[in-house]
Image 1: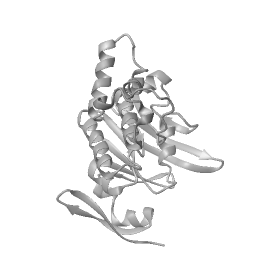
Image 2: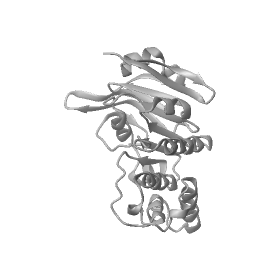
Image 3: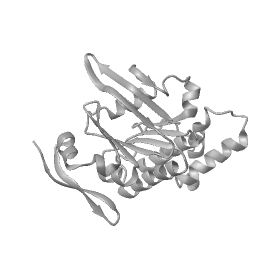
Image 4: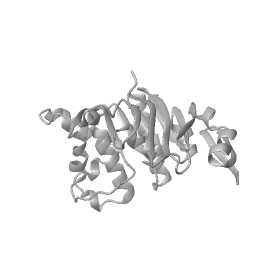
Length: 249
Protein backbone atom coordinates (compact mmCIF):
# COMPACT_ATOMS: atom_id res chain seq x y z
CA UNK A 1 0.00 0.00 0.00
CA UNK A 2 1.37 3.41 -0.98
CA UNK A 3 2.22 5.85 1.81
CA UNK A 4 1.64 8.81 -0.51
CA UNK A 5 -0.57 8.98 -3.58
CA UNK A 6 -0.93 12.10 -5.71
CA UNK A 7 -3.46 12.21 -8.53
CA UNK A 8 -3.38 15.15 -10.95
CA UNK A 9 -2.11 17.45 -8.19
CA UNK A 10 -2.12 21.04 -9.44
CA UNK A 11 -1.15 24.30 -7.74
CA UNK A 12 -1.55 27.64 -9.48
CA UNK A 13 -0.40 31.17 -8.75
CA UNK A 14 -2.73 33.48 -10.58
CA UNK A 15 -3.22 31.75 -13.92
CA UNK A 16 0.21 30.10 -13.88
CA UNK A 17 0.51 26.44 -12.82
CA UNK A 18 3.45 25.93 -10.46
CA UNK A 19 2.68 22.23 -10.08
CA UNK A 20 0.86 20.89 -13.11
CA UNK A 21 -1.16 17.66 -12.99
CA UNK A 22 1.40 15.59 -11.06
CA UNK A 23 0.51 11.98 -10.32
CA UNK A 24 2.85 9.71 -8.39
CA UNK A 25 3.01 7.25 -5.52
CA UNK A 26 5.63 6.59 -2.84
CA UNK A 27 5.73 3.11 -1.36
CA UNK A 28 7.34 1.59 1.75
CA UNK A 29 11.01 0.86 1.21
CA UNK A 30 11.55 3.70 -1.25
CA UNK A 31 13.88 6.67 -0.88
CA UNK A 32 12.59 8.92 -3.67
CA UNK A 33 14.63 11.92 -4.76
CA UNK A 34 12.65 14.89 -6.06
CA UNK A 35 14.97 16.75 -8.42
CA UNK A 36 14.76 19.60 -10.89
CA UNK A 37 16.14 23.10 -11.48
CA UNK A 38 15.27 26.11 -9.35
CA UNK A 39 11.61 27.02 -9.86
CA UNK A 40 10.63 23.53 -11.02
CA UNK A 41 7.99 23.25 -8.27
CA UNK A 42 9.67 20.87 -5.81
CA UNK A 43 8.87 22.78 -2.60
CA UNK A 44 5.37 23.60 -3.79
CA UNK A 45 4.73 19.94 -4.57
CA UNK A 46 5.85 18.81 -1.12
CA UNK A 47 3.78 21.46 0.65
CA UNK A 48 0.68 20.76 -1.43
CA UNK A 49 1.06 17.02 -0.86
CA UNK A 50 0.79 17.74 2.87
CA UNK A 51 -2.27 19.93 2.37
CA UNK A 52 -0.38 23.09 3.32
CA UNK A 53 -1.29 24.87 0.07
CA UNK A 54 -4.57 25.18 -1.84
CA UNK A 55 -4.56 22.72 -4.73
CA UNK A 56 -6.65 20.82 -7.23
CA UNK A 57 -6.47 17.09 -7.67
CA UNK A 58 -5.90 14.66 -4.83
CA UNK A 59 -3.28 13.96 -2.21
CA UNK A 60 -3.83 11.00 0.11
CA UNK A 61 -2.26 13.00 2.97
CA UNK A 62 -4.26 16.18 2.46
CA UNK A 63 -7.53 14.35 3.09
CA UNK A 64 -6.48 13.36 6.63
CA UNK A 65 -7.09 15.28 9.83
CA UNK A 66 -4.13 17.28 11.10
CA UNK A 67 -3.36 14.73 13.81
CA UNK A 68 -3.69 11.72 11.52
CA UNK A 69 -1.54 13.47 8.92
CA UNK A 70 1.18 14.08 11.52
CA UNK A 71 1.10 10.39 12.40
CA UNK A 72 1.28 9.40 8.72
CA UNK A 73 4.04 11.76 7.59
CA UNK A 74 6.84 13.77 9.16
CA UNK A 75 7.68 17.09 7.50
CA UNK A 76 11.14 18.63 7.34
CA UNK A 77 10.91 22.07 5.69
CA UNK A 78 13.79 24.11 4.31
CA UNK A 79 13.70 26.57 7.21
CA UNK A 80 16.03 25.59 10.05
CA UNK A 81 15.27 28.39 12.47
CA UNK A 82 15.17 27.34 16.12
CA UNK A 83 13.49 30.12 18.03
CA UNK A 84 13.50 28.87 21.63
CA UNK A 85 16.58 28.12 23.78
CA UNK A 86 15.36 24.66 24.82
CA UNK A 87 17.57 21.62 25.19
CA UNK A 88 18.19 19.30 22.28
CA UNK A 89 16.32 16.51 24.05
CA UNK A 90 13.28 18.74 24.62
CA UNK A 91 13.23 19.88 21.01
CA UNK A 92 13.51 16.34 19.65
CA UNK A 93 10.72 15.22 21.99
CA UNK A 94 8.37 17.69 20.27
CA UNK A 95 8.23 15.17 17.46
CA UNK A 96 6.11 12.98 19.74
CA UNK A 97 3.27 15.50 20.05
CA UNK A 98 0.95 13.70 17.58
CA UNK A 99 1.11 10.55 19.71
CA UNK A 100 -0.49 9.46 22.97
CA UNK A 101 1.47 11.15 25.77
CA UNK A 102 0.42 8.40 28.21
CA UNK A 103 2.68 5.88 26.42
CA UNK A 104 5.71 7.11 28.33
CA UNK A 105 8.11 4.29 27.55
CA UNK A 106 7.29 4.38 23.84
CA UNK A 107 7.76 8.15 23.80
CA UNK A 108 11.12 7.97 25.55
CA UNK A 109 12.35 5.13 23.33
CA UNK A 110 11.45 7.05 20.17
CA UNK A 111 13.38 10.11 21.37
CA UNK A 112 16.40 8.00 22.32
CA UNK A 113 16.38 6.26 18.95
CA UNK A 114 16.24 9.59 17.11
CA UNK A 115 19.08 11.07 19.19
CA UNK A 116 21.23 7.99 18.63
CA UNK A 117 20.51 7.82 14.89
CA UNK A 118 21.57 11.44 14.39
CA UNK A 119 24.53 11.02 16.79
CA UNK A 120 23.20 13.65 19.19
CA UNK A 121 23.16 11.80 22.53
CA UNK A 122 26.13 13.83 23.79
CA UNK A 123 24.27 17.06 22.97
CA UNK A 124 21.03 16.16 24.73
CA UNK A 125 21.37 18.74 27.54
CA UNK A 126 22.81 21.51 25.35
CA UNK A 127 20.62 24.44 24.31
CA UNK A 128 19.72 23.89 20.68
CA UNK A 129 20.22 27.58 19.90
CA UNK A 130 23.86 27.33 21.00
CA UNK A 131 24.77 24.69 18.41
CA UNK A 132 26.30 25.26 15.00
CA UNK A 133 24.09 25.46 11.94
CA UNK A 134 24.99 21.92 10.89
CA UNK A 135 24.30 20.57 14.37
CA UNK A 136 20.95 22.36 14.47
CA UNK A 137 20.07 20.73 11.15
CA UNK A 138 20.73 17.32 12.71
CA UNK A 139 18.52 18.21 15.69
CA UNK A 140 15.61 19.13 13.42
CA UNK A 141 16.03 15.89 11.48
CA UNK A 142 16.02 14.01 14.80
CA UNK A 143 12.77 15.75 15.76
CA UNK A 144 11.21 14.52 12.51
CA UNK A 145 12.56 11.01 13.11
CA UNK A 146 11.15 10.96 16.65
CA UNK A 147 7.72 11.39 15.08
CA UNK A 148 8.21 7.79 13.87
CA UNK A 149 5.87 8.30 10.93
CA UNK A 150 5.98 5.77 8.10
CA UNK A 151 6.72 8.57 5.59
CA UNK A 152 9.25 11.41 5.76
CA UNK A 153 8.99 14.42 3.44
CA UNK A 154 12.16 16.53 3.46
CA UNK A 155 12.78 19.73 1.52
CA UNK A 156 16.46 20.26 0.69
CA UNK A 157 17.66 18.84 4.03
CA UNK A 158 21.35 18.80 3.02
CA UNK A 159 21.55 22.31 1.57
CA UNK A 160 24.40 24.24 3.19
CA UNK A 161 25.81 21.23 5.03
CA UNK A 162 29.42 20.09 4.71
CA UNK A 163 30.01 17.03 2.48
CA UNK A 164 30.31 14.56 5.36
CA UNK A 165 27.04 15.80 6.90
CA UNK A 166 25.30 15.58 3.53
CA UNK A 167 26.34 11.96 3.06
CA UNK A 168 25.52 11.08 6.69
CA UNK A 169 22.01 12.55 6.38
CA UNK A 170 21.23 10.68 3.18
CA UNK A 171 22.61 7.45 4.66
CA UNK A 172 20.10 7.90 7.50
CA UNK A 173 17.32 8.30 4.93
CA UNK A 174 18.53 5.20 3.08
CA UNK A 175 18.45 3.25 6.33
CA UNK A 176 14.90 4.40 7.05
CA UNK A 177 13.78 3.14 3.66
CA UNK A 178 15.55 -0.19 4.15
CA UNK A 179 13.63 -0.58 7.42
CA UNK A 180 10.29 -0.23 5.61
CA UNK A 181 9.68 3.50 5.90
CA UNK A 182 9.52 5.77 2.86
CA UNK A 183 11.28 9.05 2.14
CA UNK A 184 10.50 11.76 -0.41
CA UNK A 185 13.38 14.23 -0.41
CA UNK A 186 14.11 17.21 -2.66
CA UNK A 187 17.75 17.52 -3.67
CA UNK A 188 19.89 19.70 -5.91
CA UNK A 189 23.06 17.58 -5.86
CA UNK A 190 22.48 15.06 -8.65
CA UNK A 191 25.40 12.86 -7.64
CA UNK A 192 24.02 12.48 -4.11
CA UNK A 193 20.55 11.85 -5.52
CA UNK A 194 21.83 9.13 -7.85
CA UNK A 195 23.85 7.40 -5.12
CA UNK A 196 21.40 7.47 -2.23
CA UNK A 197 17.92 7.34 -3.77
CA UNK A 198 16.21 4.22 -5.03
CA UNK A 199 14.19 6.30 -7.49
CA UNK A 200 14.17 9.84 -8.88
CA UNK A 201 11.27 12.05 -9.91
CA UNK A 202 12.43 14.83 -12.24
CA UNK A 203 10.30 17.97 -12.29
CA UNK A 204 10.43 20.52 -15.08
CA UNK A 205 8.21 23.60 -14.94
CA UNK A 206 5.83 21.86 -12.56
CA UNK A 207 5.42 18.66 -14.55
CA UNK A 208 7.00 15.23 -14.18
CA UNK A 209 9.62 14.95 -16.93
CA UNK A 210 10.89 11.53 -15.82
CA UNK A 211 10.32 9.03 -13.02
CA UNK A 212 12.38 5.91 -12.45
CA UNK A 213 15.76 4.47 -11.43
CA UNK A 214 18.43 7.17 -11.08
CA UNK A 215 20.51 6.32 -14.15
CA UNK A 216 17.39 6.07 -16.31
CA UNK A 217 16.33 9.56 -15.22
CA UNK A 218 19.72 11.28 -15.30
CA UNK A 219 20.35 10.77 -18.99
CA UNK A 220 22.33 13.16 -21.18
CA UNK A 221 19.07 14.17 -22.85
CA UNK A 222 17.38 15.05 -19.55
CA UNK A 223 20.46 16.90 -18.30
CA UNK A 224 20.37 18.99 -21.47
CA UNK A 225 16.61 19.51 -21.73
CA UNK A 226 15.80 20.18 -18.08
CA UNK A 227 19.03 21.43 -16.50
CA UNK A 228 20.52 23.03 -19.66
CA UNK A 229 23.70 21.18 -18.88
CA UNK A 230 25.96 19.23 -21.18
CA UNK A 231 27.30 16.32 -19.20
CA UNK A 232 26.77 12.72 -18.22
CA UNK A 233 26.80 10.36 -15.27
CA UNK A 234 29.98 8.35 -14.83
CA UNK A 235 29.94 4.90 -13.25
CA UNK A 236 32.61 4.66 -10.55
CA UNK A 237 33.43 1.98 -7.93
CA UNK A 238 31.73 4.25 -5.37
CA UNK A 239 28.59 4.92 -7.38
CA UNK A 240 27.43 7.36 -10.07
CA UNK A 241 29.20 10.70 -10.45
CA UNK A 242 27.93 13.66 -12.43
CA UNK A 243 30.50 14.98 -14.90
CA UNK A 244 29.30 18.41 -16.07
CA UNK A 245 31.02 19.59 -19.26
CA UNK A 246 29.35 22.86 -20.16
CA UNK A 247 26.27 25.04 -19.72
CA UNK A 248 23.89 25.07 -22.66
CA UNK A 249 22.55 28.51 -23.50
